[in-house]
Length: 321
Image (tube, rainbow, N blue to C red; front, side, top):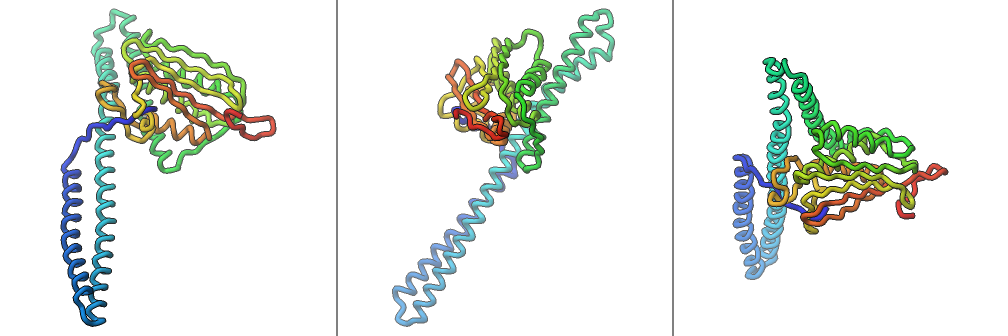
């Protein structure tokens, strides 16, 4: 992941009021603090008795404490403001992402309900397939939110097995295939790994599926995606490659941040809530794996995840050993 891009912020009245509160707090405290500090300094400088000096010191200590408290309040208000904006963005993006498949499902379901396709079995089958396909997209979007919620609260339960990862990877590919229209994507799968890896099957499935969905969203009309799983020294390498828009180098370090999405000028109309790659990073850390990104602007992106193998002694190996 190379760069970051700032997502358009849909400001609400709440965000404006929070910003105003921050400014009011800063101005309302800073001016009295400066005046009080000046009085304290003058009292110390011109005072001819120990009482005057003590008075000046107390004033300065009081104003310093007030300034510290105001700083804490300002920081907390700023954090609240930022979280409010993130929440508004998440709701806006998720609404769009959920509405798209729901609209298609409703349209085809109403068409079937009205009996307009009774004389065409092929069209009935195509409509049913579209409903199933859009339902898969809808379920995928909901799963992302639920997975992120569980991960962010440390409530995710991982059930690990020690076996080759091929079944988990192929399971993700199969589910991704159910989300695609015929001939929509040229999907190449090359899974050749026998190395046992301690892994959570559902976690790996989620990781691979989110990488595939990310690749799908950021490729154009001629979508080509490749999934490979191969044995490497010390473990296994998962690679997901696409021929999409790619990223500038300065975006790569940001794309795993929650809610982050690359610049709208690059991503075009790609929908999303900015959770997919954050979930990928969560699963990478969960498996003590390593993730690498190679991306060329305008030519595509490769995501490579190195999982440590499991030796016969029952211990993890480090990838690359």
